[in-house]
Every structure is written in C-alpha cells, then in structure tokens.
Amino acid sequence: MKFLIDTNILISAALFPNGKVSFVLSHILESHKLIISSYSLVECKTVFARKFTDKMDILIAFLKEIDFETYQTPTEIDRLKFPYIRDEKDLPILVSAILSDADILLTGDKDFQSIPHERPIIFTPSEYFDLIED
Image (cartoon, rainbow, N blue to C red):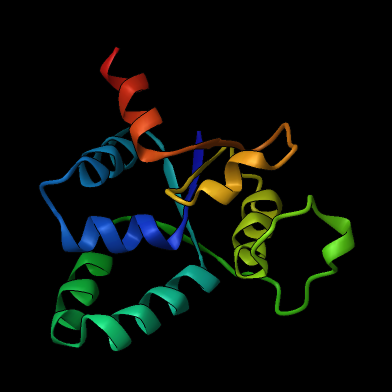
C-alpha cells in the first residue's frame, strides 16, 4: 500500500524517535511505500526554522535516513475539484494524497476526519497503531 504522511507526522517522528508516531512510521517503512508531498517537505523545514532552529540538523538527518518518494504538489489547485476541507492550508496535503493515488493518508490533524471521501483512507497515528497492534 501507498501511504502519504502529513507534515505533523514528519515533525513528530523526527523530534520523538521513540514515540508512537515513530513506531507507526517504522512499520510503514518496513511494509509499505511512503510518499511525502513537496508541500510537506517545505512546510516541515519552515516549521523547524521557526520553532526548532537548533534541531534543523535532526530533521535533515531524519529525512536522509528514511526511504520515501516525493510527490510534487501542484502549485495551483482548483478548490472546487476536491472535497471541502475547513483549513485551506490542509488542501495541498489532501490534493497530494488524492493525486498521488495514496491508499492511506496518515495525519494527526482532526480536520481531515470530516472529509467525505472513499480514498485515501484517513488514519490518525493512534488509529493505525491500534490496527497494527491487533
């Protein structure tokens, strides 16, 4: 299966290598194909530059260690062609998940839970953790 992960997953996994999100990401890397959107990569670096300046080297090392495919997020998005999402900043993630043909979107953002959709399936890290633990 193909998994696209949201920016918050990247940040959490990079900062907390022994946490639940890192465990889930490790499972994905072992068993599935990981996709990260170009939008998430830029957003992640922006967040680190603003909030975690002294930890930028951790992010760079983390991204070098994991095996992923980059999906080039479209620079222009027609909002009317995709399901409605409350926060416009989340639209590039949703669009990337749909257009990259991801099977699963992994995100900690609750705004994604209310999206009417068939694919990708949307999981939080906790939901996916519970699924792989069973």
